[in-house]
Amino acid sequence: MRLFFVLLCIYTYTVSLANDSLSYVFRSGEAGYHTFRIPALILAPDKSLLAFCEARKENAGDFGNIKIVLRRSTDNGKTWSDIQVVADAGNLQAGNPAPVVDMLDPQYPYGRIFLFYNTGNNHEYEVRRGNGLRQVWYISSTDNGRNWSAPINITKQVHKPNQPGSDSNYRFAEDWRSYANTPGHAIQLAQKPYRGRIYIAANHSSGPPQNKFEDYAAHGFYTDDHGKTFQLAASVNMKGSNESTAAELSNGRLMLNSRNQQGDIRTRIVSLSSNGGQTWDTSYYDAQLPDPVNQGTLLNLGYQKGKALLAFCNAASNNRRDSLTLRISMDEGKTWAKQWLIDDAPADFKGDYTAYCDLVLINKKTICILYERRGYQQIVLKTIKWR
Image (cartoon, rainbow, N blue to C red):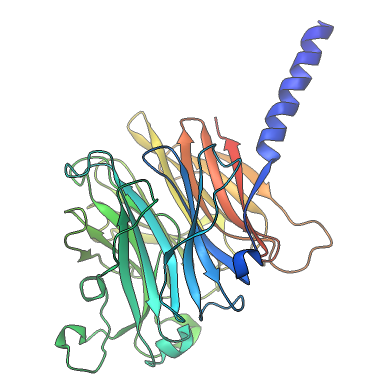
């Protein structure tokens, strides 16, 4: 009996240690970069973990000399490769990395990785005022992220900027201005009738800045032909909906989970689609998902009894970016039955402790969480056994 108790204690300690261990992926000041922000995470076809983020050269601000960089781990996040620059707009901004693995293109039977991102030539507020342009690009890799294609500009297909000039394709009545991908991973739908669709959650502003950020709205865009052409999805009909993340549900449905930029209701906005994210049947504030006006990430973990199992992670606080929490839903987001507090600020810490994050499933029982920590000084990886 005593031996059983000792073995039980050892087992409990091992599980706790595994859940509490951190892997440091990016730290401020590395490789000549001031700050690393906006993490995104995928599992490559060769089972390597690929961690992307923005490398901000001169300061921590959202605009300036910003590259998208990548680190690779071949041992489930214990160690990481050197920093690799994968998207570079010179002295301007390349950001909002949204990677996704396409495993359903017959032309690439061993998989192809897409990395969607944005470039911009002015600060966000100036772009909202009409003084600048945000564009949408992608690059791709067929060797698990070691080498990347030349960038392809898809702005004309997925954006509606009312920009003056000789190119009439940029003139739209809706006058979209600010524009950003998710941030975090994009998704590929696995079930019929939309099997193979690559879907990227996004957001934009429309017209000049409005009170309480009412010029913002979430939307998505997608490709049904593996990146040859792209289509715009409908915008969410809730003013102030902003940074978003998507997950596939059962029977051709899709969930979009969005930040409420207005901040009047400190919860996430959830939108449901019955046609793979093309249009939205309903949108609502989910009181189960508190949020301090921040990013969050949503992930399909598979299916049980015909229903999608979902994971959602965000800074689950009403007043500041802190209390990073992972939640699991067994009923496609109606309720969130399981939760783990992933990281929480010590009592003497001031400011934002945990902020943006992303999730990936590395096996049926294990989720990896890549997230910003300690006032944006670190991007770290934590592994959780969720069942």
